[in-house]
Every structure is written in C-alpha cells, then in structure tokens.
Length: 453
Image (cartoon, rainbow, N blue to C red):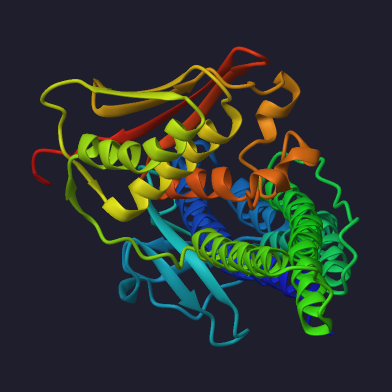
C-alpha cells in the first residue's frame, strides 16, 4: 500500500543502511591497518629483545630460547650467522637472509604461510650469530578481525532494530494526525462541517490541524451566512413582489373607485419595482466586492469636492424635513487615489441614513487631515443606535428597527456597501452613537503619496 507511513519508514531505514554500511567498512579498514601496524611493531620489538638476550645465554639455553619463543608466542625465530647462513630456526628455514630487508612480509614456500618479519642485529656473543629474525604469522590478525566483524554485525543489527523501532514510532506519530485530517477533509467534502481535528502539538502538524478546524468553522459560518443571505433576499423581494402582484391585479380587475386611486396604484407599483431593482443592484454589487471582482476607476481626486457634491444632492430631501446640513473642510487637504463615483456612493449612503433617521436638528459633515489620512466625519442629531446594535450595523440586511425599515424604503445593504467600498479604498469606517443623541460615522481614506501625485 502506497502510504506516507511506508514511504517514511522505508526512507529512514534506507538512510540508516547507507550510513551504517560505509561506516562499518571504514571501521574495518581502520582496525585492520592498525592491527597490521601494531603486529609489525610488536615483531620488531620482540626481535630486538631476543637480540639483546643473546650475550646472556650459553649454547644450551640458546636452543631453549628458540623453542620457547615458537611454542609460547606462536611466532617463529631464526638466527643468522656472519656468513649469511641460518644457524638455527624454530620453523622458517627456507629463506635467504641476504634476500630479506630489515622488516616486511615473507611467505614460506614449504608451509604456504605468510609472515610479518623483523630483523635485529645481535650484540657480541660467543655463537657467531649476527642477526635475529622474528616471524609473526599473519593469521594472528584473523582472530581480531573476526571479533571486530562480529562486533560490527551485532552493533549494526542492534542499530537497525533501534532504527526500525524509532522509525515505526515516529512514522505513526507523524501520520496519525494526517489520517485524522484526511478523514476530516472527506467529511467536510460531504458537507459535514461539525468536524474537529485534534491539535495537541505545537509544530507544523498542529498548526495545520488548527487551520483545518478554522476552515471548518469558516465554511460553516459561510454556509450559514449564505443561507441567511438568501433568506433575507427572498424576504426582501417577497414584500415588493406581493405589492406589485396585488396592485397590478387590482388594476387588471378594475378594483379601483376613481382615477386618483388608479394612479395611486400605478405609483405604488412603480415605487416597489424601483425598490426591487435597487435591491438587486445592491446585492449584485456587494457580491462582486466580496469576491474581489469589483473594478475601481482609480484617479487622483479631491475628497472635499466629492463630499460637497454628495451634501448638495441630499440637501433638498433634508430641507423637506426641516433639517439643516452643514459642510466644512480644512483648507489644503491632500488629494487621494480613489474612484470618485464610488467615494460619492459611500458618502451618499451615510447621508441618506442620516436624513432618514433624523427628524429634527442638523447634519454636520467635516473633513480634516490627520497624519496621512483624510478624516470624513458625518454627525447627526437623529434617533441614534442602541449600543447592542452597533457591532452589527455594517452587516447585510441588518436593521435596528424592523418595523420602520420598509417604511423608509431602505434595502438594508447601504452600510454594508459603504464598508466594502471603504475597505476597497484601503480605508476604514467606524461609528459612534447613543440612543436619542444622534450618530457619528468616521471614514478614513489614505492621502495620496507624493509619487502618486
């Protein structure tokens, strides 16, 4: 089965093997070289020791020395005279001292054995012996090498077993969260968003698990928001549609008593159809904004000119309600990079709300510069907003007064559109309000940089 567990398990095991095998070979070579060097040094020292003993021995003890060295040390010894002939030997006889150097390797043709040998010059003695040769069989290295190989095999086997155990545990610990995430992802794909992936660790896997949990929550919230949005749109369209259907049927069936009442029905149908058109346009624009498919015609603009134009357009409606509208802007305000039509739409939405919910008093519009921001403040003396409603007034279709909203003709999307447009201009919008004391909206739009100007 082609799983991450098997891939990880095989990869770690392969890494252990490619490290252990070359390491074992290198250790074996180092140990072999060291043993050879040590045996050669030991052979040379032994030859020198035997050469130094010769002056202390008589002829009888000389034979005992040769026999004892051969029997007790597994080494062979040969004594050569001044004429280059071998005087006595414990086992290696078929060699010519003249053909050998001070030390090296020698193969006995009679027995086929290989030796390391060393020569030492004998001190003055009564045996006419001038050189002592000590031969150490190469097979003495075999025991040590076999022990080393056995130790390496055991160490390698133990290391591989430890590697297998460690890899198994590590692979299980790494792949278990991934399997949980895979299972959760499959459940999310089928529509079950009430999944929770364990996120106990603080590493990348834990971060991924927490991200999946956040994704599930966001998708659930998005699904609920979409359902609520569709429900709100359907609800908002149902009322004007029922008006249009009802009054159009009244006109069709002739359920009116006078021409004046007929015209009243016509105006109601016109107003409700206009309201539906505005609602559909608002929904379409808001959808494009949220999906980043809303183009802006960027240019350098004077925000005070746009704000003053929006104020002038709202003044006739305010005048009908007896509301004073004032406008004040600091001199020499910097230009801003913005879409003038969309900025005016932001201001108009705020002003329309202000006129709608202000029954007496005034509306003040002030523009000022704060560092690199242009502050646009819209204050009114209207009914105000309860504190409990303030966190939600920029949400779609949210109304603080459900009973009066349709009488005011709003779609419930004006403030939501104002917020989205402000954020598209890299600005921010906030609100302060108290019931019965009015409302103040603050819109902050970045001033244009010098290079933009």
